[in-house]
Image (cartoon, rainbow, N blue to C red; front, side, top):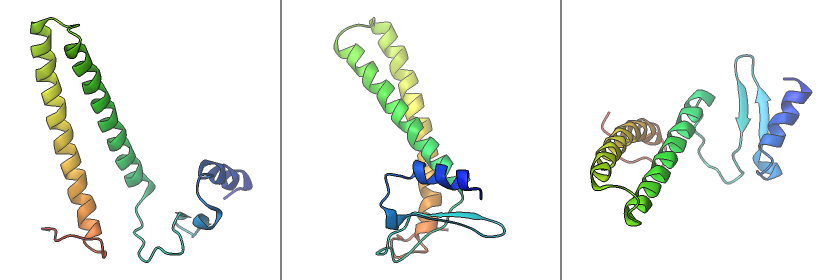
Length: 124
């Protein structure tokens, strides 16, 4: 890892306390450790999986924000009744899609957590 790469990662993680960050590299993996001294268990996941989780959260935030705007338009009578029905149907479809996606993500996450002291009984 070059000095510039290391510095860039430190800047990106600058909101963490100094003792909560360690960046290392093995022959196969770069490891960014954000654990603290009181963390008794650590789960290692790939940056790809972490990115997927972040994208899912961002997607849900966007949908919830859109629903909030839609409800405001309905509340302030800024839409015609037939448009409200159509938008409600589309909103319901979006919510159901995100419920299915997040339930799948939650199931995968719970399977990993089941291996830790934070786990719940999970049907494999």
